Image (tube, rainbow, N blue to C red; front, top):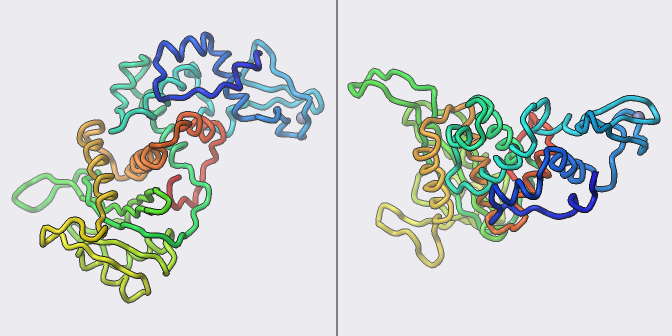
Length: 317
Ligand SMILES: [Zn+2]
């Protein structure tokens, strides 16, 4: 198992399918690469902590411990757990998702890598999990923009209105930290059809990322009036009067994030169920927050191989 290959960072930007295949001519090269990412200081037995571990050529995904005689898979706690798909296909699909500004559909991935549609769908979904993996989220003192949007997300329901079929529109809220250049976007609690978000809902989301001495930019939506009463310094731009930016007061960054996200929903995914909406938002937020990061591809690989499911998820990284 070659060591020198593992130390080179593969960057997704500009890498092609051909380059990827040249870099990883066999699946073993891809597995070696993941071993290097997961154990930069060398592998240790998950049972007894011993460093005396080795891999057999016949089972390259598993380590065998020479101290306690147990074995463990390098993919056990990762998004690749139990996968039978060639790891090079995974590397390729992660590359596709990283570079797809408006997202990529399972249909498109299926056309690229073959196999079953279900497998492609599952792969993208696992990659989204890695992109949405949170470390910890602290509240910052900064200048923020906050804006909400309503997107159609399943289940499709029959309405009593004359229009016949329709969908629930689910409220989503975006908070952009101008100082850190990061967006935090989240699905708000389920709301009845056409019911606007409440001030309390908005405040609950903002409180998680902003300290009270922060400056918050909003539009004229009444729901934000609560911020004035709760100690935030609020600066308002009035869209009703065709005012979109005044003295640097605007919510343009969040709005451009929404427009990209909505184009993805319409153009790439067509219909998204409410169950997976947050995962799609996480995917877009991850790409947005890492749009200037030259090692975005490597970052996803790290998160993918170290993935641990979290129950108490707050915001995406
Ligand atoms: Zn052991």
